[in-house]
Length: 435
Image 1: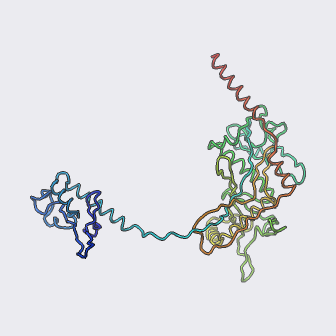
Image 2: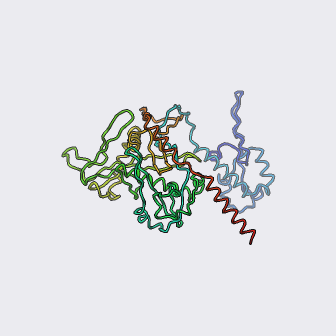
Image 3: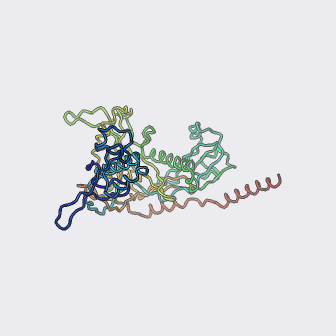
């Protein structure tokens, strides 16, 4: 009972220590008293409670209290009934048991200041508007719309390709292209006289509106990466490098900030060291690329390096054969190797430029290749002392000119849109008054 009570008074909110320590050379004094919940005799406090005689002096029927509270509970048996005292005893023993399990406080670890490299590329510019126009094609007929798109011609061989992402929802076609312009890529499939223009910043405030903006951005990324020789795997939501010819390894050239041109294998069959024979499966470099809204007006593109596996360079490997290989691969991809993979994807996507542009004609999305870094104070990772070089490309007249052209675009006439909205409102008010 003393052990379970923790040497303190079990009376609620007392917690007085039941050992009086002596400071003048005398022995310490134990002042705790064992009070009966059900009295030892039938005439004592709460003694008329039905309890076998053999149970009355066991620890289960005793509560450890200080002398003051022993007197109180015995003089006020109706206030401090059997049920009340049993609850006090249980609460105190539970509290003591919880304290006994509390871990010993460890010394505070030494913190260090480090710059942590993320896997995020900042998006410095996004389209101001999403255009919507009535369209006779259903959501399931997107393939038919694609056949009728009039893809714009490039101004010159250095100009970025115009991407034409769209979605069909609610009987309308949504796009970043200005559908009000005569001869826009979607002119043949929309009602050009009923075009709406919606601010992207307002669409982000609504879950469905944000979903539509992200879908348009994702589809523009599909088209952009396809021009760089990549393919999208919808089952695993990742981009990967396919082979250009079945059974033939593929490599690509790219440029990093400190080297002119680098060649890297992006699809290959691993070989057995002993015989040089193929192992019967293929690795393909892959990455998950996703758009994230970080704040009201800031978006980023995240890069998550992965691997795509095939059995013969083209046929996807069955899931049950993938797990062990990918787990083993990821376990070896420790910080510096992982960051090198991120840098490769950044450099390849940008084609050796300080940024890459998703061009929608009069609007653009501009992704900067300066990887976002964070200064943190933390415990760090023992043994991981390698410094990462987050190098960036130097600007020149051509890259600066491309940037200015991308963010300039066409000045959208928001006044016209607001005037149209006001006119519709006035018309509705007039009809209401007339009615």
